[in-house]
Length: 355
Image 1: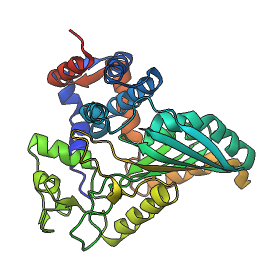
Image 2: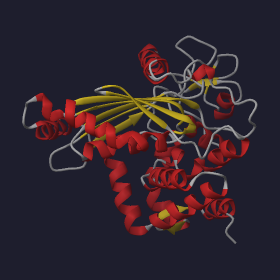
Image 3: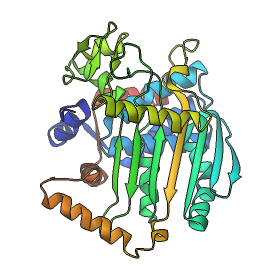
Image 4: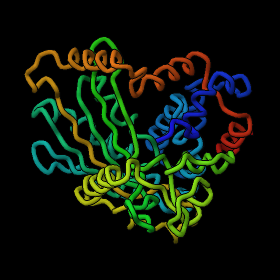
């Protein structure tokens, strides 16, 4: 996949755009987003979780999943597609298996409702699985898994989405972008975390490209007739993204449909239908977590071995590992503020009902 995606361009241009933007302290951004969620019908608990999550994405440069998503959250809430006050139910299906019904609410509050017990299971047995269904996930996955690695655990998560990706050789969207995330502790440093879609790029990046008038890299998507296109508007208007790497990405997208939907009891991406809820944008599907205590492997030096592997990879010529740019951006924005375009900041304040 080309490195020239809209969110990567935004990250590369951070220093230049920061001067033209309004810096907002991270805590102030969280408070602003929390007011938006409360004003549009969520409970206080849900508002706090979503605000922290969305602001964290913006802080770390995941702009396609940051404040860009706020109108979509609001649209889903206003349309009645999602229940902003849902109370999830947690059920133990075995000594290492938790089932969570998000009750048509957002995924992160449902996840956090079960997280404490989930970690207990991991510590007790060395591994545990959490299957969430009837959940709306509209964010990046790395905020879900990074904290596990900071607690010394290895974590994987999978989530499917609405159908916007064709299978290899196909003309009809079947899969979602279907991201997966992985986090591992690293001795002497921040966790190594990757968060990547099974599609050629994130749907949010396509929308940003359409808004900003950019073309997509070749091989990103097809139009409504199944013809290759670099026009983001053609992808969004009846077209679809392609899986990355052809059949390899298609296989991963299929696997994630099985893990995040078939296994959890959530909807397949093709089953998401919000046509009766104009303005809705948050897909209601499922999410799976697998978390492992690496100390059970018996090596006694797991995090050190991972650090050694990272050193080997860099010695071989890879200039940075997944997550490193995110951590660098985080340090800058926590120091200098999260840069927001004045028009976007005004939009957020209007949604919050601020004068």
